[in-house]
Image (spheres, rainbow, N blue to C red):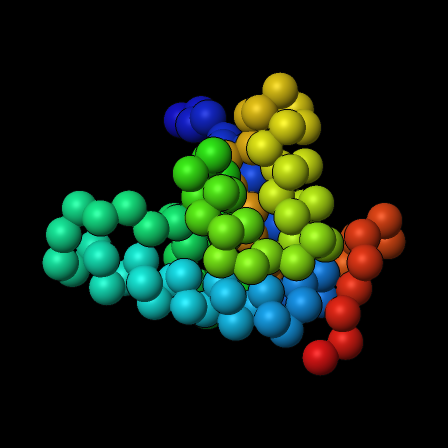
Length: 108
């Protein structure tokens, strides 16, 4: 069997400020709560064992920016939305992912 792969990016948690990590934590909790109650839109941020997965879309990115994403985080979100003809669907931050030399890192 041959299944199609989804385009996604995985980055180390080191590429996220502590404030952005707390923002993702809050958004993931809000997303879980809304799924249980109603159809209100909140940015699609899912908590994983060692990080987060973000569904890349204009509403989710706008919600993260409005909630206070740092410039470094906004730059990563912008890359995901605009690179590869908009084909990136997911961004994952994970403690075990590779650190990318071309991106800033944050020691927290």
